Amino acid sequence: MLEIPDRVTAIYVGSDEELSAQVRSSIESIPGWQVQRVIDVDTAITLATEQTTAAIVLYISDEYSFAQSLKLMRMLNCDTIAVVVIYDRLKADQLLQLYRNGAAECLGRPVNLSRLTLVLEMFRAPQTAGVSKSAATVASGASTNGGELAPASEYQQMMDQVHSVASLNTT
Image 1: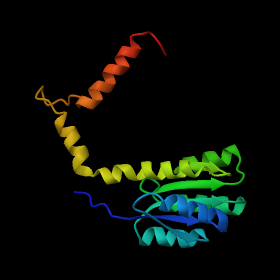
Image 2 (image 1 turned 45 degrees about the vertical axis):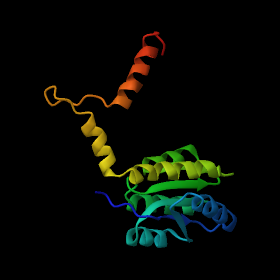
Image 3 (image 1 turned 120 degrees about the vertical axis):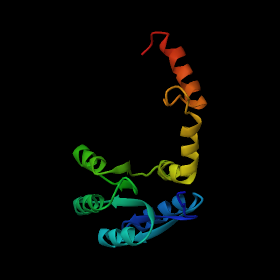
């Protein structure tokens, strides 16, 4: 069974003291989360590889920090670490680069802290559910019909709703 730590760490990377305090209070309001603050990307990379890190919050204030953020994202496995970017001014092509490199969310300033909290809660939710629960859901959906998987009851209910709306010839 997958072992889930009681507390997970988010690393805030940035030099803005006021934003750091806001991010810290927002993240630490989520049960089981703690925040470490670092100033530079190299320290964040070291911390992320040495300890269990669930998220990195990057503050991009200029072109240099944008380039450093891309460097960090390319060095990390963004499939296992949620990377949330907070920025002052970025062009559309820069945002696209961040998303292509694995950013879970990019938030412009002024920051919507409830959005940040939501993204981090959503990222941790599959981990807290555990492997056995998802395996049990799949197993309960198995049928004896030639070994095919039949939809679980929740899935079936959702599909029934979809079919009832789809029969109305709506798009």
